[in-house]
Amino acid sequence: MRCHEVDYEIIGDDIQIVEIELDPGETVIAEAGAMNYMEDGIEFESKMGDGSEPEQGFFSKVFSAGKRMLSGESLFLTHFTNHGNKKSRVAFAAPYPGKIFPINLAEMGEEIICQKDAFLCAALGTKLDIAYTQRLGAGFFGGEGFILQSLQGDGMAFIHAGGTIIKKELSGCETLRVDTGCIVAFSPSIEYDIEKAGNLKSMFFGGEGFFLANLSGRGTVLLQSLPFSRLVDRVIANLPASRRTGEGGSL
Image (spheres, rainbow, N blue to C red):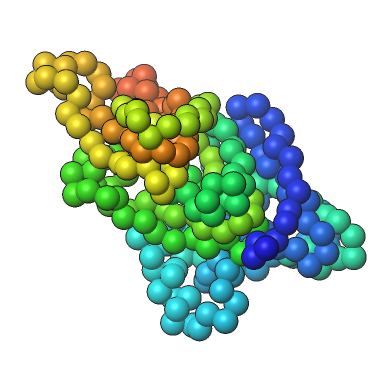
């Protein structure tokens, strides 16, 4: 097994944290600023790289970090290691209301593709890379741009999304049409493309946007019920005009 084998517990309902138990010497990697609390014995260090390739040179680490920046993530990852002589716990919280979803990468064919801001934390040994959308149209109009995240390994990884996370299993002979902002993650075997959202009247007045995502093939698809961008749009739309445009306004 390449990844550290960690135990975990997800705490809460709509605004969750994941508490990870580390044996002495075990490490979990996380996005910068995701840590909520940690017990005695755990120390953290910001590193340029995910640590999945210990022999990786400096320039390779810089290149990997640069690819992460292309997907909208931070340059550094934080490594939390248990340097004590007993089990200790560290907890991570999502940056906005929603759900945290645990993924056993070994059961997913050792890879999953997810939206660029979905990754929260993972066991050391998990490789974070970028993945390009399969078609030019999907890159321009698919809601997530050309670049998505790829999580590779054989251990536990944790992603987060807005609202509720819905898991769909496609058998290979069906197509799932989805609002482009509602896609959280999918198996590499899933084909991702876009189509127009009905006729011209439906596109402008239907409220579903101009395009829908087509997901087909055999594999797993994870969807979110409330994309963060949709939540922000609703908040801004319901703010008084003076709060939206006033001097010193926060939005």
